[in-house]
Amino acid sequence: MNTDFKIGGCLRGFSACGCGRQDKQLNTYDYLAGVPLPEGVSDLVEVQFKNTRKGYFRNDNHLTLAKGDIVAVEATPGHDIGVVTLTGQLVPLQIKKACLKPGTEIKRVYRKVRPLDMEKYEEAKAREQDTMIRSRQIAKSLGLDMKIGDVEYQGDGGKAIFYYIADARVDFRKLIKVLAEEFHVRIEMRQIGARQEAGRIGGIGPCGRELCCATWMKNFNSVSTAAARFQDLSPNPQKLAGQCAKLKCCLNYETDTYMEASRQLPPRDVTLETADATFYFFKADILAGLVTYSTDKRLAANLVTISATRAHEVIRLNKQGDKPLSLDNSSSAAPARPIDLAEQDDLTRFDKVKRRRKNNKKGQRPRRNGQGDAETPAAQ
Image 1 (tube, rainbow, N blue to C red):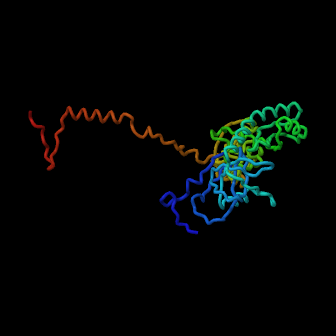
Image 2 (cartoon, rainbow, N blue to C red):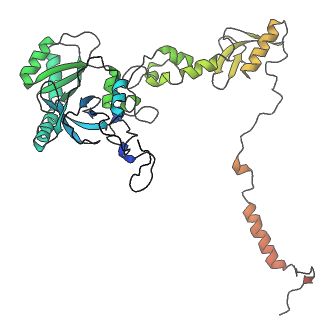
Image 3 (cartoon, rainbow, N blue to C red):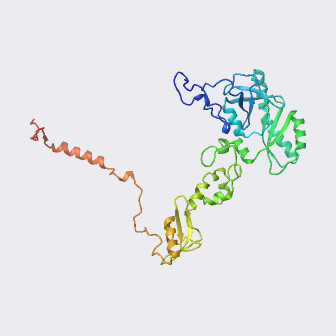
């Protein structure tokens, strides 16, 4: 394959054509966009639908498809409408990443959408909000302990997917019959978790950025209170819980770093003996490697903050039967003060220059010529 190719009349790196539909965490950057590839590399395409649903289809009709094209694909039953988000040899890699079950049938791409297809698609999408509200009322009247969070109609309007949340197993057989009679479509129930629902709704987290579950996070790992304990966070449920009312996923991000740093700290149940008093563990700054000790087990009395290295040194001396005179051996050293740029120079230095210039004008100091002789001002 020839790698010396030109894009837009000049040599380029990554092509901007790889940036397509940016829809939350489903976006895929095609870093091979613009690279001439041999024909017949792959006839698979990736198609994205509403929210967090996408699928992989086979282009049996050999249509000329590019990122952003709206196509009609095979569905069960009828057809669905989606947007092409990836083509070429990257699609098999995405299928491998998706971990599809062996023997999964890959459906076909029928055609590019026609005006009639788009009319049916818009009509079906316009019914989703009303359908969701009405389905919630029906579920409540049937006494089902579940919450319907979203409804997605198929492109041809013949099928509707109901996404629901439930804490326990729900028998919704009667609900399906009532919904089918109410909306005259084929019903499919799909259970999602609280984190998936938060990702669908979206929002801004306490960090000031968009929720991770609504941007890039696809797989959700379990989060335990041990992650908060390792980071010495306050066990306040309101602060530890996210918008999904579950523990924040970001608690796992720095847990490994805190666990590695905490191994360098002395044990919390070990007391330090000095010539004057006995010190008990009070608190620790794990990342800074600083430990604060108190002379009282329960109160903050005579607090002394030392490094983890000094704490291990005192523990070693205590085991040998020695007691240092003080816990902090660097107390005599003056603490380093932060540099204040405003204190480096006198703020009135410009005023002094102005006064000097005024004095020079009044005194008329003699000037020197190039030979070093003084010159007097010319007499008027």
